[in-house]
Amino acid sequence: METTVSKEIFEVITPSELLHHFQGHRNLTRRVIETFPEDALFNHRIGGMRTFAEMLMELLGIAAPGIKEIATGKIEPLIEHVEHKNKKANLLQLWDEATDSINHYWAQIKPEQFRKQIKIFGQYEGTVWSSIFYFIDNEIHHRGQGYVYLRSLGIEPPAFYER
Amino acid sequence: METTVSKEIFEVITPSELLHHFQGHRNLTRRVIETFPEDALFNHRIGGMRTFAEMLMELLGIAAPGIKEIATGKIEPLIEHVEHKNKKANLLQLWDEATDSINHYWAQIKPEQFRKQIKIFGQYEGTVWSSIFYFIDNEIHHRGQGYVYLRSLGIEPPAFYER
Image 1: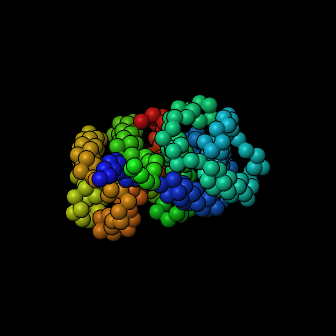
Image 2: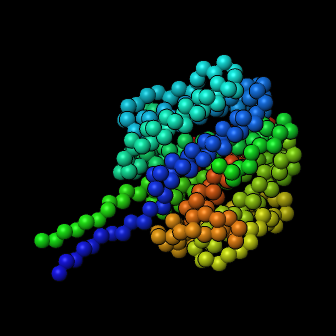
Image 3: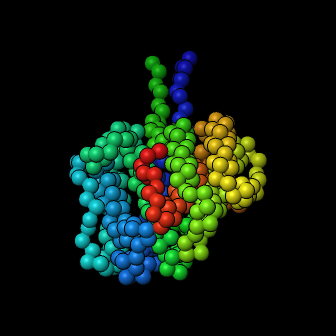
């Protein structure tokens, strides 16, 4: 008689669900970019904070390069500036290229990698999952700030719950 | 000879890690509340948005009641107002009571529940995990707005990456 003892593991979230969650947030951020008037995107600021375009450059520097680094293991420094010539269309194009890059490299991340320790951008210690959660949380944080910028301009932002 | 075939499942994040992540964010929000001047917490607003205290009442209405509902299965309506008498100390006390309540009811959530479909507060369809992610994301979103409120008052908020 066989006896098979195996600890049953119930997943909280699968890798593909986490990708979908990430891209859902990135899709909402894209709509926030679209909602900004072109000049306000590059000029408007509150309390000495960065413009929304400057925050977006941080997000662009993190998301696709971070997922690529997790997938390939090749460490690159964090670069928080991308050339966009103060054009919303250029930022949107960079955003869409990042979307494709994230999908491409996500497919190369092995399921057993998510719990591994890494030092993302050669600087930040954590697990793969905690690093990806940080990417998402940081985007939500800055996008929430973009919502205040829009409201201060009398513009209604996209609904938060629509991804 | 025994043959044991079992699909190997690698978790992205465990339930206890998700609780720790949630409470880490809640701890940061608590420090943002502490950083607000008492009057600004209840009076300051930008672009016709709610005060930070009003946003906190939404967060208090969601987090602990939401986790209790997931744990017990007993559906209650969403209540976005709690009595606080415009006192920061009362909001902080409510925040701490919510922290304890979340820990208490989280321990009653079964690992297999996270992927189950629910209709939280009798209104919002999703899985248990997606509902909890929404609670966290919504808190990050509004806390990011609180950061702008603080900056507009010339006050430096706590570091985002410190939980």
